[in-house]
Length: 186
Image 1 (cartoon, one colour):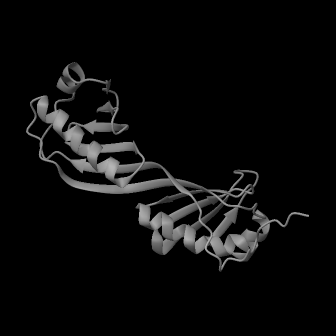
Image 2 (image 1 turned 60 degrees about the vertical axis):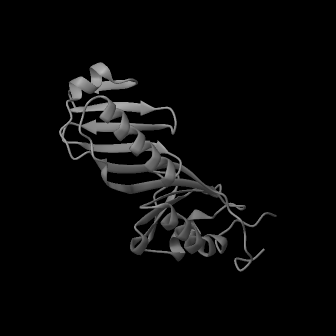
Image 3 (image 1 turned 30 degrees about the horizontal axis):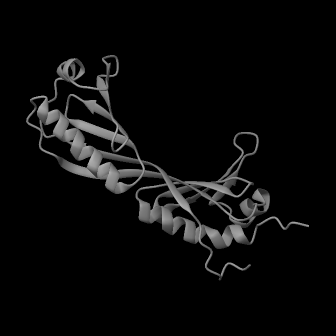
């Protein structure tokens, strides 16, 4: 098996974080008293609201800024954000859905081989770093993509990036580097 062959890797999106604005002031106390699936956190000045479908958790601030986490695709994040805006409209706020943006995507992927982390880090300094006393994974940052990759010796990788396309591109870029540092089974 060589890196030139097309190997189908399953990249599983585990969390999409998105933000949007309501363009109006929100009374957190009203949301806490009248909303469903709500946790009021006055010490942090926010309300947490959970939606079941799509499954997201939203942090709502009185300024009208809302952060949605927990979606498993960019489409689910947008649908959940729009649904949340609709819930707030039904509570009597003059919400206008605006400035929606996916800010972070977390994904996991399993390689079909194990990785020799010390060799990988030596080959890719200073971009790669590995501190086994602090964390069992090697870190690799791709600055131009704004992506960070955590590589475990088992061949599991965890990626964070600004969007789904960037995460997929990061996997394509790092695969040949990981392939040359794979552990050969005897």
